[in-house]
Image (cartoon, rainbow over all chains, first blue to last red):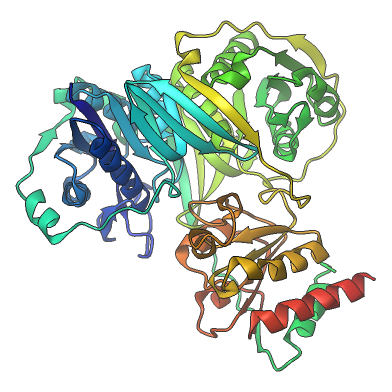
Length: 261
Length: 320
């Protein structure tokens, strides 16, 4: 039987751009160029490698987001994913992580899955909790923050490098995994891949397709509220000296003045 | 007074510093009740009492070590039901955040992660977060259910405030999911003898300019002279010069020490995201145009292999 892999990806504002908040204190996604979150490229890459090892596998790439989020799906398709699902609905604007995990859980179930692959965190929200939330909602094992992952005979195994120890993990499918940026460099889409992606199917679902009420998601339905966002004041310009042979000593003098030595 | 549940991060009974910071922040909101699970849970009580825990709920079972995350979620959920707290606080470690997230779903609550400060508010605790690579500071609160909040290390100075710290056994019945993910082996990280990166008062980091694994001792020597932790930029880690556990930046650790010294690090957004909130920033870099110099309190444009060893010697001399 075919191994059904769903990769959850996020379309994020470019971190090298001038990211800011909209008037309603949601992330401004209109005035900054967006792209497939870099950390999700690792998830697409590992899904492709797992699919290569399997006899028969199909990769669906899934995102929740505005119209432009299709760009993220196209990128994943051009890397080699087979098809895409885009959950888009005006009522989703301002949805927080609990709402997003609800939408993704419903969409993953509707798509059908044996394995869900996520990145370790988004590069905008950077919470890193979505894979755990998804596993909790789906009621399947959570095998997260893997630097190495493989799937064989309906079992997923992987290495998790934690703060105090390195762990080897094992779980039966279906399962939710997340992979780190240590899991292996993501491939660049080939010209052939980019051309092929244009013909791959992208299905659009809205909230009614997923049996989700508008009040369960969106800014009003959010479980958290942002009361204010202030730009951090620029750091005051420091002293910069050119090393003329005494740079280390000058630095020591500065550190001593600041009572660090 | 309302009780605040605090999840204890410990290694075989030795409480890690971020938990003491959590207890200090928890006291602003209510009376801290600590929940400690796994081997050595009971041994945490004395330290937790010293820092203000009125009660310490403990549970130990093989499941906590043998299976990933979920048994701990079951335990905190049991504690939540027993205590009915005003808020639940976790350290912002990878595991702490995952336990917090799953608990939030189960108790129908919102979650805030990576708070750098916490204050009581009319509508519940207000969390300060540092976002978009620390370009913005936001104030948020949980608007549904009991606030579940994870707090970054170094967000508060731990303050001792003796309390009873009464140890109470916690009854935990494991859920169906508890045994979903088996931990088939665990290799504890070897101690370097240096402070923990996220907890250190001083961090010395090396980047691309260090040029190779064989040159990292130059960075380590400076760190050791200052009693600092050693960090590395993503470029240095990706090149295989230093372990990923030491990576500072968006996909590694985010640090906020009193003093951050960047050696041979250009200061790309990836790196800035992980160190921009440091109190004092110092850099040594050959390239006068490197973006790191926009952040520094003091910068030296020069060869790190000249400047850093000279600094190390000077620190040693001054410290005698």
